[in-house]
Image (cartoon, rainbow, N blue to C red):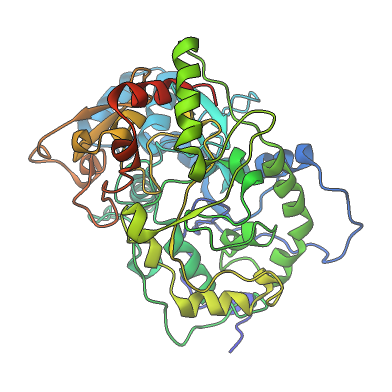
Length: 470
C-alpha cells in the first residue's frame, strides 16, 4: 500500500547515508515540495556545481551547532585535548575524525560534503562521498577516502542523548535494518543504502511499506573519481547502469521527502550531470621523470591500453568489462545487487520505466579510465591496494594497513600507509576501523595480476612514472 508522508512507518531518527545525496534523519524539518513543471534550462556545469553545494536536495543530518559540539562526546583523553585547544584546532580535529573535507572555494567553514539549509542545519550532498583530498588538498569529484560514517553517527547519537539528559548508547550506530555504515575508515556500504531506500518506494517513488526487505550483501566500496564519468557508457564498478540524471538520483530517497519532490529535482540533476561531464582531473603536483615516463607510455600502450585505453588528443577508451574469472578481484560487490532488485529498478521511474534499463546480471568489473589515477588511491573497486606499486606487485600487498592523514607516496604512487602484521590489541571499534584488513568480507586484495604476467620490473617502474602524467 502507498503510505502518505505524514504517516511514514519509519522512525524519525533513522538515518541512511551513502555516497550521493543520502539523507540522515533526525531533525524536525522536511524538504518542501517544489512545482513539478518549470521551464527547461540548458544543462549548465556551473549551475550543477552550485546546486550540489548550495541547494538542499535531501533532509538534514545534523545541525551546525551539533557539528561544533561533537567533540564533547569524544573519548576522555581526546575530549580533554579538544577542550584545551583553540576553536580552529578543535575544528581540524573534528574534520579529521569524521573525514570532513575542506570547502576551499568559499569561506563558509562548512565541510565540502554538506549543504546548509538556511535553518541552521546541514544536509548531506554528493561530495560527502565524492569530494576527497590527497596530499592535504581538497578535490571535488575525488572519492572521500577519509570518511567514517559510523563514527559520525555514533557520536551524533551520543551528543543527542546527552542533550536530552539520557545515558549515551553503548553500541555503534548503524543504518535502519541494522545495515552497517562502513567497515573501515574511508569507505562506505553505499550499495546497500540504495537497496534499502528503494525498498520503501514503489515504481513511481511513492512511499510504501514493503512486504519484505531485500537481501543485503554488505560490502565496503571506494567511490570512483567523477572526472572519468564522461568516458563511461555505463557507471559503477561493474558497469551495469546507464549514466542518466535519474540514475544519479537514487540516494535522494530520504523517507521524509515525497516522490513528487524527488521527481521535481530531475532538471537539477541534469545540471549536476553536466557538471560531472565537464569535470577534469587534477594534474600531478610533484616532479616527473619525463624520459622514464616516455618509456612507460610505450610499454603501457602495448599492454595496459587494451583494457584501460590510450590518452592524449587521440586517446580512446574501450569501456571493457573484464570477466571475473580473468580479473580475479574480490567478488562480493559483483553479486551484491540481486537480479530481482535490478528488474524492479527497470520497471521504475529511475529507468524511465524501462527505456534506460540496468543490466540484470554483472559478469565482471569495468577496467576504469586512468585519467588522474595518481590521485585516486587506494586502488581496485574496494580500495584494498594502497599504491600502484602494490597493484603491480601482488606479493607485497599489505594485508593490514593504516593510512596517514595527508601523506603521499610519490615513489610508489598512492597513499602513504603503515603496514602491520596484526591488529593491535585493546582497540575500540572506532580505532579498529582505522585499519584496512583484507580478511574482512569484501576487503580482499587479490587479483589484477596482469602487470606481473606481462611486464618485467623496469617496465613496471616506467609505467608507474607514465601514470603520473595522465
